[in-house]
Length: 329
Image (cartoon, helix red, strand yellow):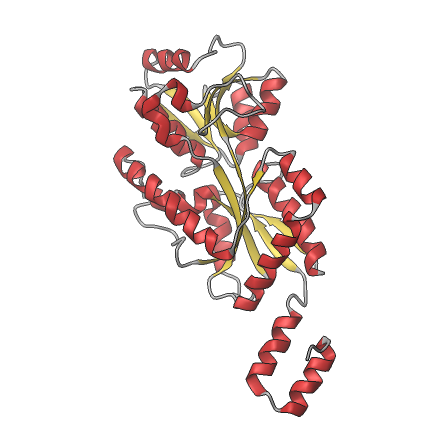
């Protein structure tokens, strides 16, 4: 028999169902108060925008506010520490990227956290292609032009990224290595700050999510040289894939992705409720259109997919990090 919440509680008392019934009542109650969602990138970033789209839709489906709180810095490590300092009760969540789940911890000799044991996955939201860009008007229209510049410049290129251990950091470093060139990594707090520096020619290259790159290319501020994906993007159909330009770099054709996680040990009922809300959002036309407008490819997902995707990508990135000597204190 199915009871409304209040009737269920009364039935538990009279039936003497004990802990089983109490657990059922608790599961029915979640969420009973607002949820805090930590964003690991600053306001205005692509990651932040995706986070807020999910928060708006999830709040509607869950019947409680989902309040976004930005904690940028150290490519997500500050945000992760913020999550780990909260109770594992489902009322503090975090939006997290491929970077934090499969790259960042392995760029430190002493890992600041463990992606496999510190989080419970809720869902993978979607993927975004990454694009290597340079400032417009610099005579760099092909990857070969950038390769020539890097080899002829003392110390190599100055290239930016949203932070140490970000996909942009690793992909650009790996690509330069495959081109036989060198570079100096310049980390920024978020993609937006790096884009500003790139347009201002304070750095010479940066790998960006395709939504950001396409807008700046179409505005005439940046030039796109290569897409880190297995096929060209409809947004930038004239820009070749990295494999087309450099077959040895085919293994770098990996899109970025973003997920929602909770602290490890969060009740299974809360995770299930959050996962169900995410599935309801994927069926929502407005939610889909808002993410697709950011060039995000939505993907079906279960809570278990977050850890499996992280493990899958870490199997590629960790050997690359070791080979390139990117781990530091």
